[in-house]
Amino acid sequence: MSFTNPSAVLPTKFGDFTIIVWPSDDGKDSVALVTPQLDVSKPVFLRVHSECITGDVFGSLRCDCGQQKQNALIKIAKSKNGIFIYLKQEGRGIGLSEKIRAYALQEQGYDTHEANILLGHEPDPREYSMVKTILDQLKVKDIKLITNNPSKENSLREFGFNIVERVPLKIRSNKYNKRYLETKKIKFKHFNDDSNRYYYGIGRVEESSAVEAIATHVKTHNLDPFLRIGIGFYADKNTLANEEQKKKLKDLLKLTMKYHPPLTPILHYSFKNSKPKDYKKELLQIKNELSIFKKIQLNDLKKDHLEVLMFASRHFMVHFPIDDEYLHLISNPKYSKLVRARKILTILDNSGGRGIQENIGSFEKKITLCLNNEINDIGIAGGFGPDNLEPFFHLKKYFKINFSIDAETRLQKNGKLNNELVNSYLDNLIHPTITS
Image 1 (cartoon, rainbow, N blue to C red):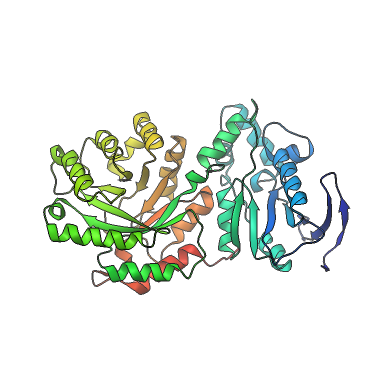
Image 2 (cartoon, rainbow, N blue to C red; image 1 turned 90 degrees about the vertical axis):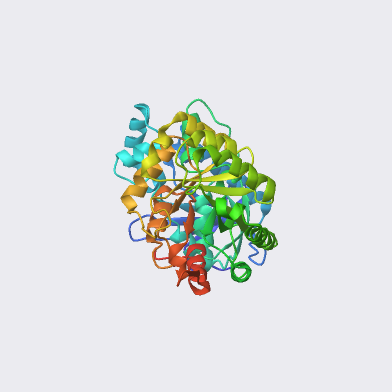
Protein backbone atom coordinates (compact mmCIF):
# COMPACT_ATOMS: atom_id res chain seq x y z
CA MET A 1 0.00 0.00 0.00
CA SER A 2 1.47 3.37 -1.03
CA PHE A 3 0.89 6.62 0.84
CA THR A 4 1.00 10.26 -0.31
CA ASN A 5 1.40 11.50 3.27
CA PRO A 6 4.84 11.50 4.97
CA SER A 7 5.51 7.87 5.89
CA ALA A 8 8.32 5.51 6.87
CA VAL A 9 8.98 2.09 8.37
CA LEU A 10 8.94 2.20 12.18
CA PRO A 11 10.28 -0.84 14.05
CA THR A 12 9.12 -0.85 17.70
CA LYS A 13 9.37 -3.15 20.68
CA PHE A 14 5.80 -4.23 19.88
CA GLY A 15 6.48 -5.04 16.23
CA ASP A 16 7.09 -3.37 12.87
CA PHE A 17 4.74 -0.66 11.63
CA THR A 18 4.49 1.94 8.92
CA ILE A 19 4.14 5.37 10.49
CA ILE A 20 2.04 7.86 8.50
CA VAL A 21 1.55 11.52 9.41
CA TRP A 22 -1.41 13.77 8.59
CA PRO A 23 0.02 17.30 8.92
CA SER A 24 -2.08 20.10 10.41
CA ASP A 25 -1.71 23.87 10.14
CA ASP A 26 -2.13 24.23 13.90
CA GLY A 27 0.72 21.82 14.65
CA LYS A 28 -1.62 19.08 15.87
CA ASP A 29 -0.43 16.48 13.39
CA SER A 30 -2.27 13.17 13.53
CA VAL A 31 -0.33 9.91 13.36
CA ALA A 32 -1.23 6.37 12.33
CA LEU A 33 0.84 3.24 12.90
CA VAL A 34 -0.21 0.64 10.34
CA THR A 35 0.77 -3.03 10.25
CA PRO A 36 2.89 -3.83 7.15
CA GLN A 37 0.37 -6.08 5.38
CA LEU A 38 -2.88 -4.21 5.99
CA ASP A 39 -5.83 -6.06 4.44
CA VAL A 40 -8.90 -3.80 4.42
CA SER A 41 -11.02 -6.53 2.80
CA LYS A 42 -11.15 -8.00 6.33
CA PRO A 43 -12.10 -6.32 9.62
CA VAL A 44 -9.18 -4.20 10.83
CA PHE A 45 -8.16 -3.91 14.48
CA LEU A 46 -8.25 -0.21 15.37
CA ARG A 47 -7.19 1.80 18.39
CA VAL A 48 -8.00 5.53 18.43
CA HIS A 49 -5.81 6.97 21.18
CA SER A 50 -5.82 10.57 22.40
CA GLU A 51 -2.47 12.02 23.40
CA CYS A 52 -1.61 11.81 27.11
CA ILE A 53 1.88 13.10 27.80
CA THR A 54 1.67 12.31 31.51
CA GLY A 55 0.57 8.70 30.95
CA ASP A 56 2.09 7.83 27.57
CA VAL A 57 5.50 9.48 28.11
CA PHE A 58 6.04 9.77 31.86
CA GLY A 59 4.15 6.66 32.99
CA SER A 60 1.71 8.51 35.26
CA LEU A 61 -0.27 6.32 37.65
CA ARG A 62 -3.13 8.84 37.78
CA CYS A 63 -4.69 7.46 34.61
CA ASP A 64 -4.70 4.28 32.53
CA CYS A 65 -3.65 5.88 29.23
CA GLY A 66 -0.08 4.56 29.06
CA GLN A 67 -1.19 1.02 29.79
CA GLN A 68 -3.99 1.28 27.23
CA LYS A 69 -1.52 2.53 24.59
CA GLN A 70 0.86 -0.36 25.27
CA ASN A 71 -1.80 -3.08 25.40
CA ALA A 72 -3.44 -1.81 22.22
CA LEU A 73 -0.15 -1.81 20.30
CA ILE A 74 0.50 -5.37 21.46
CA LYS A 75 -2.95 -6.47 20.22
CA ILE A 76 -2.54 -4.70 16.88
CA ALA A 77 0.95 -6.07 16.24
CA LYS A 78 -0.22 -9.57 17.12
CA SER A 79 -3.24 -9.27 14.79
CA LYS A 80 -0.95 -8.36 11.84
CA ASN A 81 -3.91 -6.37 10.47
CA GLY A 82 -4.45 -3.20 12.40
CA ILE A 83 -4.09 0.54 12.82
CA PHE A 84 -3.16 2.68 15.83
CA ILE A 85 -4.28 6.30 15.42
CA TYR A 86 -2.74 8.90 17.73
CA LEU A 87 -4.68 12.18 18.02
CA LYS A 88 -3.40 15.42 19.54
CA GLN A 89 -6.25 15.72 22.04
CA GLU A 90 -4.37 16.06 25.30
CA GLY A 91 -6.47 16.02 28.46
CA ARG A 92 -9.63 14.90 26.63
CA GLY A 93 -9.13 17.80 24.26
CA ILE A 94 -8.59 20.64 26.77
CA GLY A 95 -4.79 20.79 26.41
CA LEU A 96 -1.91 20.07 28.77
CA SER A 97 -2.07 23.29 30.81
CA GLU A 98 -5.77 22.90 31.52
CA LYS A 99 -5.31 19.22 32.24
CA ILE A 100 -2.78 20.03 34.98
CA ARG A 101 -5.21 22.61 36.39
CA ALA A 102 -7.80 19.83 36.40
CA TYR A 103 -5.33 17.63 38.27
CA ALA A 104 -5.01 20.36 40.93
CA LEU A 105 -8.80 20.47 41.31
CA GLN A 106 -8.86 16.68 41.66
CA GLU A 107 -6.41 17.03 44.53
CA GLN A 108 -9.07 19.23 46.19
CA GLY A 109 -11.64 16.44 45.94
CA TYR A 110 -13.30 16.98 42.55
CA ASP A 111 -13.42 14.17 40.01
CA THR A 112 -12.16 14.56 36.43
CA HIS A 113 -15.70 15.16 35.11
CA GLU A 114 -16.39 17.92 37.64
CA ALA A 115 -12.93 19.49 37.20
CA ASN A 116 -13.37 19.97 33.45
CA ILE A 117 -16.73 21.66 33.99
CA LEU A 118 -15.35 23.93 36.73
CA LEU A 119 -12.63 25.04 34.30
CA GLY A 120 -15.29 25.98 31.74
CA HIS A 121 -14.95 22.96 29.46
CA GLU A 122 -17.23 20.15 28.43
CA PRO A 123 -16.63 16.94 30.40
CA ASP A 124 -15.04 15.41 27.29
CA PRO A 125 -14.79 17.76 24.27
CA ARG A 126 -12.90 15.33 22.03
CA GLU A 127 -14.13 14.71 18.49
CA TYR A 128 -13.11 12.17 15.87
CA SER A 129 -13.57 13.71 12.42
CA MET A 130 -9.84 13.21 11.71
CA VAL A 131 -10.32 9.49 12.24
CA LYS A 132 -12.81 9.44 9.38
CA THR A 133 -10.31 11.24 7.13
CA ILE A 134 -7.57 8.72 7.95
CA LEU A 135 -9.74 5.61 7.63
CA ASP A 136 -11.31 6.82 4.38
CA GLN A 137 -7.85 7.32 2.87
CA LEU A 138 -6.84 3.85 4.03
CA LYS A 139 -10.15 2.51 2.60
CA VAL A 140 -11.15 0.89 5.89
CA LYS A 141 -14.81 -0.10 6.30
CA ASP A 142 -15.03 -2.92 8.86
CA ILE A 143 -13.46 -2.44 12.27
CA LYS A 144 -12.64 -4.34 15.43
CA LEU A 145 -12.47 -1.34 17.75
CA ILE A 146 -10.12 -1.56 20.73
CA THR A 147 -11.80 0.63 23.34
CA ASN A 148 -13.68 0.79 26.64
CA ASN A 149 -15.51 3.90 25.45
CA PRO A 150 -18.99 3.50 23.89
CA SER A 151 -19.02 7.16 22.83
CA LYS A 152 -16.01 6.57 20.59
CA GLU A 153 -17.78 3.59 19.05
CA ASN A 154 -20.90 5.70 18.46
CA SER A 155 -18.89 8.39 16.68
CA LEU A 156 -17.36 5.91 14.26
CA ARG A 157 -20.74 4.27 13.59
CA GLU A 158 -22.23 7.69 12.84
CA PHE A 159 -19.40 8.27 10.35
CA GLY A 160 -20.61 5.11 8.56
CA PHE A 161 -18.03 2.54 9.69
CA ASN A 162 -19.11 -0.99 10.51
CA ILE A 163 -17.99 -1.88 14.04
CA VAL A 164 -18.02 -5.67 13.97
CA GLU A 165 -16.58 -6.01 17.47
CA ARG A 166 -15.63 -3.87 20.46
CA VAL A 167 -12.43 -5.22 22.05
CA PRO A 168 -12.07 -4.06 25.68
CA LEU A 169 -8.81 -2.99 27.30
CA LYS A 170 -8.71 -4.39 30.82
CA ILE A 171 -6.50 -2.29 33.09
CA ARG A 172 -5.99 -3.03 36.78
CA SER A 173 -6.58 0.00 38.99
CA ASN A 174 -4.16 1.34 41.58
CA LYS A 175 -4.57 3.66 44.56
CA TYR A 176 -3.83 6.72 42.39
CA ASN A 177 -6.30 6.08 39.56
CA LYS A 178 -9.08 4.17 41.31
CA ARG A 179 -11.40 7.17 41.54
CA TYR A 180 -10.50 8.23 38.00
CA LEU A 181 -11.54 4.82 36.66
CA GLU A 182 -14.72 4.84 38.76
CA THR A 183 -15.60 8.24 37.30
CA LYS A 184 -15.09 6.85 33.81
CA LYS A 185 -17.43 3.99 34.61
CA ILE A 186 -20.14 6.04 36.34
CA LYS A 187 -20.12 9.32 34.43
CA PHE A 188 -18.87 8.24 31.00
CA LYS A 189 -20.22 4.65 31.04
CA HIS A 190 -16.89 3.08 30.08
CA PHE A 191 -15.86 -0.57 30.57
CA ASN A 192 -19.24 -2.24 30.99
CA ASP A 193 -21.18 -3.36 27.91
CA ASP A 194 -24.30 -3.82 30.01
CA SER A 195 -24.28 -0.12 30.94
CA ASN A 196 -24.27 0.80 27.26
CA ARG A 197 -27.80 -0.43 26.61
CA TYR A 198 -30.15 2.30 25.46
CA TYR A 199 -33.15 2.76 23.20
CA TYR A 200 -34.78 5.08 20.70
CA GLY A 201 -38.43 5.03 21.70
CA ILE A 202 -41.60 5.33 19.65
CA GLY A 203 -44.69 5.79 21.79
CA ARG A 204 -48.38 5.15 21.20
CA VAL A 205 -47.93 2.28 18.76
CA GLU A 206 -51.44 0.90 18.27
CA GLU A 207 -51.49 -1.19 15.09
CA SER A 208 -49.63 -4.24 13.81
CA SER A 209 -48.98 -2.42 10.52
CA ALA A 210 -46.95 0.18 12.44
CA VAL A 211 -44.81 -2.52 14.06
CA GLU A 212 -44.20 -4.18 10.69
CA ALA A 213 -43.30 -0.85 9.07
CA ILE A 214 -40.81 0.02 11.81
CA ALA A 215 -39.21 -3.44 11.65
CA THR A 216 -38.87 -3.22 7.88
CA HIS A 217 -37.29 0.22 8.01
CA VAL A 218 -34.86 -0.59 10.82
CA LYS A 219 -33.47 -3.45 8.70
CA THR A 220 -32.05 -0.83 6.32
CA HIS A 221 -29.63 0.32 9.04
CA ASN A 222 -26.45 -1.13 10.49
CA LEU A 223 -27.22 -0.79 14.21
CA ASP A 224 -25.16 -0.65 17.34
CA PRO A 225 -25.80 -4.14 18.78
CA PHE A 226 -26.67 -2.56 22.15
CA LEU A 227 -29.27 -0.20 20.71
CA ARG A 228 -32.93 -1.14 21.03
CA ILE A 229 -35.87 0.43 19.24
CA GLY A 230 -38.46 0.82 21.99
CA ILE A 231 -42.01 0.14 20.84
CA GLY A 232 -44.35 1.76 23.36
CA PHE A 233 -47.85 0.37 23.91
CA TYR A 234 -50.23 2.42 26.07
CA ALA A 235 -52.46 0.90 28.77
CA ASP A 236 -54.29 1.90 31.94
CA LYS A 237 -56.79 0.34 34.34
CA ASN A 238 -59.52 0.49 31.69
CA THR A 239 -57.33 -1.62 29.39
CA LEU A 240 -56.98 -4.23 32.11
CA ALA A 241 -60.77 -4.42 32.38
CA ASN A 242 -61.24 -5.00 28.65
CA GLU A 243 -60.51 -8.50 27.33
CA GLU A 244 -60.48 -7.39 23.70
CA GLN A 245 -57.89 -4.68 24.38
CA LYS A 246 -55.74 -7.08 26.40
CA LYS A 247 -55.78 -9.57 23.54
CA LYS A 248 -54.78 -6.83 21.10
CA LEU A 249 -51.86 -5.89 23.37
CA LYS A 250 -50.71 -9.50 23.55
CA ASP A 251 -50.88 -9.84 19.76
CA LEU A 252 -48.90 -6.64 19.27
CA LEU A 253 -46.28 -7.79 21.77
CA LYS A 254 -45.90 -11.20 20.10
CA LEU A 255 -45.47 -9.49 16.75
CA THR A 256 -42.85 -7.10 18.15
CA MET A 257 -40.91 -9.98 19.70
CA LYS A 258 -40.58 -11.52 16.24
CA TYR A 259 -38.23 -8.62 15.52
CA HIS A 260 -36.32 -8.62 18.80
CA PRO A 261 -33.59 -7.56 18.74
CA PRO A 262 -33.56 -4.69 17.94
CA LEU A 263 -37.27 -4.01 18.50
CA THR A 264 -38.23 -4.21 22.16
CA PRO A 265 -41.76 -3.78 23.55
CA ILE A 266 -42.41 -1.44 26.48
CA LEU A 267 -45.78 -1.20 28.23
CA HIS A 268 -46.48 2.46 29.00
CA TYR A 269 -48.84 2.09 31.92
CA SER A 270 -50.69 5.14 33.23
CA PHE A 271 -51.90 5.38 36.82
CA LYS A 272 -53.74 8.65 36.10
CA ASN A 273 -57.15 7.11 36.70
CA SER A 274 -55.96 4.73 39.41
CA LYS A 275 -56.09 5.09 43.17
CA PRO A 276 -52.73 4.80 44.98
CA LYS A 277 -54.05 1.91 47.05
CA ASP A 278 -54.57 -0.02 43.80
CA TYR A 279 -51.09 0.51 42.30
CA LYS A 280 -49.65 -2.81 43.41
CA LYS A 281 -52.82 -4.70 42.60
CA GLU A 282 -52.78 -3.39 39.03
CA LEU A 283 -49.10 -4.24 38.65
CA LEU A 284 -49.84 -7.80 39.76
CA GLN A 285 -52.71 -7.95 37.30
CA ILE A 286 -50.34 -6.93 34.51
CA LYS A 287 -47.88 -9.56 35.68
CA ASN A 288 -50.56 -12.26 35.69
CA GLU A 289 -52.59 -11.29 32.62
CA LEU A 290 -49.94 -9.67 30.41
CA SER A 291 -47.06 -11.75 31.63
CA ILE A 292 -45.17 -11.65 28.36
CA PHE A 293 -44.36 -7.97 28.95
CA LYS A 294 -40.93 -7.67 30.54
CA LYS A 295 -40.50 -3.89 30.43
CA ILE A 296 -42.89 -1.37 31.90
CA GLN A 297 -42.90 2.42 32.08
CA LEU A 298 -44.72 3.70 35.16
CA ASN A 299 -46.52 6.91 34.19
CA ASP A 300 -48.49 9.31 36.40
CA LEU A 301 -47.57 7.91 39.81
CA LYS A 302 -48.95 10.25 42.48
CA LYS A 303 -47.31 8.90 45.65
CA ASP A 304 -45.33 6.05 47.25
CA HIS A 305 -42.79 6.20 44.42
CA LEU A 306 -39.99 4.28 46.08
CA GLU A 307 -42.31 1.60 47.39
CA VAL A 308 -44.01 1.15 44.01
CA LEU A 309 -40.70 1.15 42.14
CA MET A 310 -39.31 -1.49 44.48
CA PHE A 311 -42.42 -3.62 44.00
CA ALA A 312 -42.55 -3.20 40.21
CA SER A 313 -38.85 -3.92 39.76
CA ARG A 314 -39.33 -7.37 41.30
CA HIS A 315 -41.45 -8.30 38.30
CA PHE A 316 -40.37 -6.03 35.40
CA MET A 317 -37.54 -4.00 33.96
CA VAL A 318 -38.79 -0.56 34.99
CA HIS A 319 -38.64 2.81 33.22
CA PHE A 320 -39.60 5.72 35.46
CA PRO A 321 -40.40 9.24 34.15
CA ILE A 322 -39.57 12.10 36.56
CA ASP A 323 -40.83 15.66 36.19
CA ASP A 324 -39.76 18.68 38.23
CA GLU A 325 -42.30 17.97 40.97
CA TYR A 326 -40.48 14.76 41.88
CA LEU A 327 -36.94 15.75 40.92
CA HIS A 328 -35.96 15.55 44.59
CA LEU A 329 -36.05 11.76 44.27
CA ILE A 330 -32.79 11.84 42.28
CA SER A 331 -30.94 13.20 45.33
CA ASN A 332 -32.50 10.61 47.62
CA PRO A 333 -29.85 7.95 48.38
CA LYS A 334 -32.60 5.33 48.62
CA TYR A 335 -33.70 6.12 45.07
CA SER A 336 -30.20 6.08 43.57
CA LYS A 337 -29.37 2.84 45.37
CA LEU A 338 -32.61 1.23 44.12
CA VAL A 339 -32.02 2.46 40.56
CA ARG A 340 -28.53 0.99 40.45
CA ALA A 341 -29.51 -2.31 42.08
CA ARG A 342 -32.60 -2.88 39.91
CA LYS A 343 -31.32 -1.20 36.71
CA ILE A 344 -34.25 1.21 36.60
CA LEU A 345 -34.15 3.71 33.73
CA THR A 346 -34.72 7.30 34.90
CA ILE A 347 -36.54 9.32 32.22
CA LEU A 348 -36.41 13.12 32.50
CA ASP A 349 -39.80 14.22 31.20
CA ASN A 350 -41.58 17.47 31.98
CA SER A 351 -43.92 17.18 29.00
CA GLY A 352 -46.30 14.44 30.12
CA GLY A 353 -47.28 13.63 26.54
CA ARG A 354 -48.03 17.25 25.59
CA GLY A 355 -45.24 17.56 23.04
CA ILE A 356 -43.48 20.35 24.95
CA GLN A 357 -39.70 20.32 24.79
CA GLU A 358 -37.49 21.35 27.69
CA ASN A 359 -34.53 23.65 27.09
CA ILE A 360 -30.98 22.31 26.88
CA GLY A 361 -29.75 24.10 30.00
CA SER A 362 -32.46 22.53 32.12
CA PHE A 363 -31.62 19.06 30.79
CA GLU A 364 -27.91 19.66 31.46
CA LYS A 365 -28.55 20.51 35.11
CA LYS A 366 -30.77 17.46 35.64
CA ILE A 367 -28.39 15.06 33.91
CA THR A 368 -25.51 16.42 35.98
CA LEU A 369 -27.63 15.88 39.09
CA CYS A 370 -28.22 12.27 38.01
CA LEU A 371 -24.55 11.61 37.33
CA ASN A 372 -23.47 13.18 40.62
CA ASN A 373 -25.82 10.73 42.33
CA GLU A 374 -24.33 7.79 40.36
CA ILE A 375 -27.40 7.46 38.13
CA ASN A 376 -26.24 7.00 34.53
CA ASP A 377 -29.06 5.01 32.92
CA ILE A 378 -30.94 8.08 31.70
CA GLY A 379 -33.63 8.83 29.14
CA ILE A 380 -35.02 12.14 27.93
CA ALA A 381 -38.51 12.72 26.60
CA GLY A 382 -40.90 15.48 25.66
CA GLY A 383 -41.48 17.08 22.29
CA PHE A 384 -38.87 15.19 20.29
CA GLY A 385 -39.41 14.40 16.62
CA PRO A 386 -37.46 14.17 13.37
CA ASP A 387 -36.98 17.93 13.03
CA ASN A 388 -36.03 18.86 16.59
CA LEU A 389 -33.37 16.45 17.76
CA GLU A 390 -30.67 19.10 18.24
CA PRO A 391 -31.02 19.11 22.06
CA PHE A 392 -30.55 15.33 22.12
CA PHE A 393 -27.39 15.48 20.02
CA HIS A 394 -26.02 18.38 22.08
CA LEU A 395 -26.51 16.43 25.31
CA LYS A 396 -25.03 13.27 23.84
CA LYS A 397 -21.98 15.19 22.60
CA TYR A 398 -21.59 17.17 25.82
CA PHE A 399 -21.84 14.27 28.27
CA LYS A 400 -20.36 11.62 25.96
CA ILE A 401 -22.82 8.92 27.01
CA ASN A 402 -25.73 7.16 25.36
CA PHE A 403 -29.11 8.50 26.38
CA SER A 404 -32.40 6.84 25.67
CA ILE A 405 -34.93 9.07 23.93
CA ASP A 406 -38.68 8.75 23.59
CA ALA A 407 -40.95 10.43 21.05
CA GLU A 408 -44.69 10.33 20.67
CA THR A 409 -46.63 13.49 19.81
CA ARG A 410 -44.26 14.74 17.09
CA LEU A 411 -44.44 11.39 15.29
CA GLN A 412 -48.18 11.67 14.75
CA LYS A 413 -50.44 13.19 12.12
CA ASN A 414 -54.12 13.57 12.88
CA GLY A 415 -53.62 11.66 16.13
CA LYS A 416 -52.10 8.62 14.43
CA LEU A 417 -48.51 7.44 14.16
CA ASN A 418 -47.13 8.51 10.79
CA ASN A 419 -44.69 6.14 9.03
CA GLU A 420 -42.85 8.93 7.22
CA LEU A 421 -42.21 10.84 10.46
CA VAL A 422 -41.18 7.67 12.30
CA ASN A 423 -38.71 6.72 9.55
CA SER A 424 -37.21 10.20 9.48
CA TYR A 425 -36.90 10.21 13.28
CA LEU A 426 -35.06 6.87 13.27
CA ASP A 427 -32.83 7.84 10.31
CA ASN A 428 -31.75 11.06 11.98
CA LEU A 429 -30.99 9.29 15.25
CA ILE A 430 -29.14 6.28 13.87
CA HIS A 431 -27.07 8.09 11.24
CA PRO A 432 -27.24 11.83 11.95
CA THR A 433 -25.78 14.35 9.52
CA ILE A 434 -22.16 14.92 10.58
CA THR A 435 -21.18 18.59 10.53
CA SER A 436 -17.75 18.43 12.20
